[in-house]
Image (cartoon, rainbow, N blue to C red; front, side, top):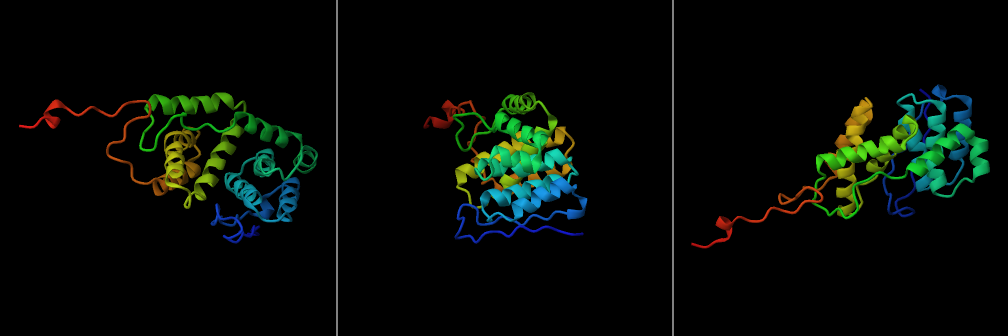
Length: 226
């Protein structure tokens, strides 16, 4: 197998993302246009966005996603980082891939509700509603596939994140993204998302209650003194 490796930056250069695994892609499996776009990204200075771009494409290439999905995945982090303008994106990846990237930006993040506090679980109907919202907003199931890959890449780099951010990301993954991958039959993503969420989530307090609900009031017998 011929592999493409993107050099990880030194931890001092990007302290928020000290560990980003190099992405491995079988060059021979890629169409010429995809290969050319990947090579164009490889000459950019390594940073958070270029590394995520390659890792995202690598994750989807393992699923043998179609060319437009791979190109859109390559584009999304570059657009987020302002590293490619519209004209260059169209030149590198073509209109179908740019359209997918635009639609993914329109869908945006589908996360846990505002007002969530660390230690709270989502009620089943809340998690199911968020999964349905993501599917409804995505006019193309390929957008959901890319969004799942984005969450996977995000979770891979969460080890040094603050505890509150870890809890939130792990809960989103457990309640929304892993079940969604399961529903779509994307087992490879499902298993890794579940493993990463379990490894990333700090232990939940035994007093945790579902989001939107109040902790149980102590019983009179437990508070009264005899």
